[in-house]
Length: 210
Figure 1 (cartoon, rainbow, N blue to C red):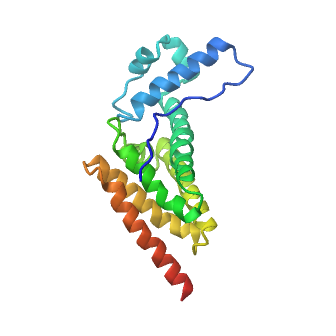
Figure 2: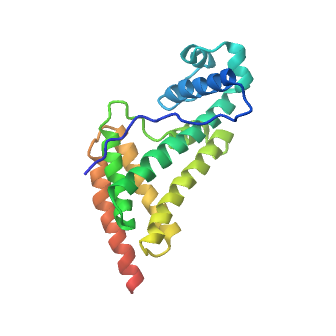
Figure 3: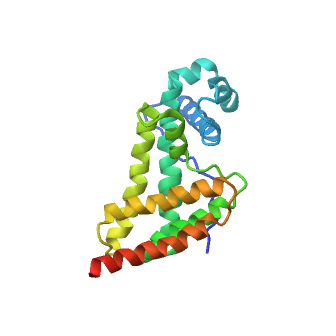
């Protein structure tokens, strides 16, 4: 079973102290940047493209985000809200009311995501590979992947699996692997990963009982 994965919904609430026009410009810049940076390489997107796509003046963009890195950091934070929590966590919870079922349901969510024409793979992984793990954007992406791991370890702990954090590391290998496999042209990658996930869970339970 797969779940239809919606396009990200931008619903951040700006601080009340900001004027409406300022807040609107801030959101338009993030929305435009999100669409550009999540689909293309960081170095490939010029700030002039963000200005054009958002419809704000150059001075306005740089007032909100003085550097490209600052804009990308905001977009990575938005990606965590929209993708990690809004799609992966919420999607898995909607498909199963059992923690073990939610772990497997992550791949059902991925299956729907992989079928989309605008499938964009994992932004966090792409940024690490492009910018390097020691770059500020790479470090931020690693932190966001750690949040994904915490979602998985939470499900694992609730399911009574042994060493939930270690289990999550193995589970993320399956998650990242099928994301790359789908990007390489295998639309069934999530289903393959789900079958492997069942074996990982069974092995964990068997090891814990010995």
